[in-house]
Image (cartoon, rainbow, N blue to C red; front, side, top):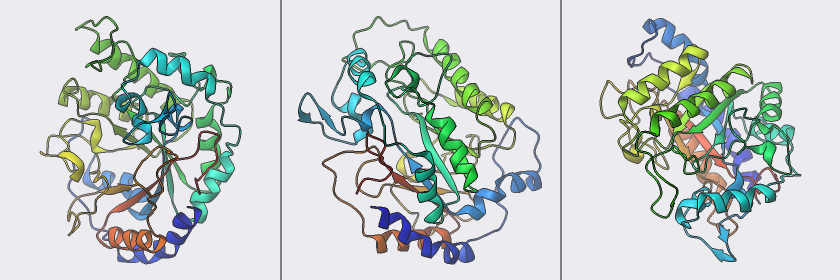
Length: 345
């Protein structure tokens, strides 16, 4: 599907020309920021219009298979959909994760050549596995045969190509013993008081990826919809992130107020700099608001061997033009193979 990404570059300039450039509403924040200062902070993102989303992790290796059988649903949801014990998941997949064909420069070059201006990669998805060298967890890339810090290599390559490096980070964590609620098939002892410990752990990992890898353009949160996460946690986490990198942009999934896949917050009190429509494009855009449509090229985010339902390149070009003309950004996903091959073909 290299052609699906590369073909869309032809529309980037057109989309930018059509994009709205007016100031937007200012969401609440604990950091003192004037509308002019917010517009300046958001300026690179509003002009970017096109970014690459990368879903990559332990789930990329089994590619939708478990015990020789195909598991339904999205590839990155393997643990959940397959009802796999988190410890068995870890012990099975950590020794298998060895993306020897990973080439950070190649990944970055594909995004640059497609006309993309920023790259958002899953530092940690819902299965809890960290793609960087984490000092607060042994459930990370350094515990695999690969033993290379993928975030370090990719961030250097992305910046060398003149793009913004951005992080996806999951609030939900099926693996961590202190995360609640448990999956029904997870029989580990449950402590009702454990959730604050989990948040401390999550913030310690956020501090690592916002301290050790230079300037980060966006933290793209996800997995906020379970009832253990609330507005207070969201507000505190937004403050925490902006306290480390004041110029960073944070999506609205940091808070608990997102109205489903349409992606916009239900009320003005919700934190986050922009809305996140998923697999959909608002028919009339969202005048006065910043927004970004995230979209798969087939039906799944993480690589899945059986998913061949690829969108036509011309359809992707039309999507980019449509989104940019309405003042939004287009975050187009790729799901690399478990061996590190950049874009499945």
